[in-house]
Image 1 (tube, rainbow, N blue to C red):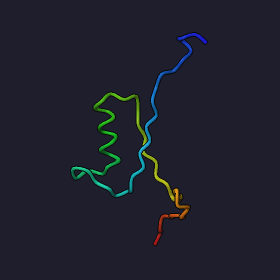
Image 2 (spheres, rainbow, N blue to C red):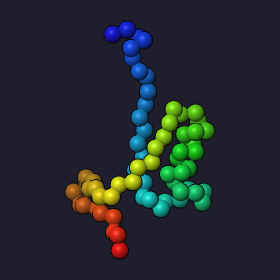
Image 3 (cartoon, one colour):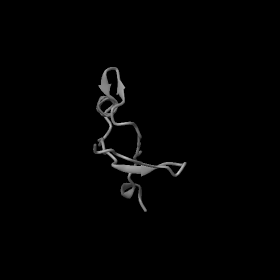
Image 4 (cartoon, rainbow, N blue to C red):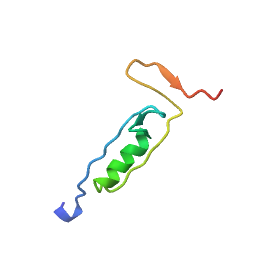
Length: 64
């Protein structure tokens, strides 16, 4: 494979609580602003409805 066929890049993933704030701003919005400021190629925010971590405890979003 030649150098022209390679793609250089880094994928960063942050896990935060939905309502966490930094300097009065939602942390997800702050992270995106920092990414733009540092001229990263892009950024996205995704919201999980359910999941589990290393302790195997299921966490689900409460609707009511």
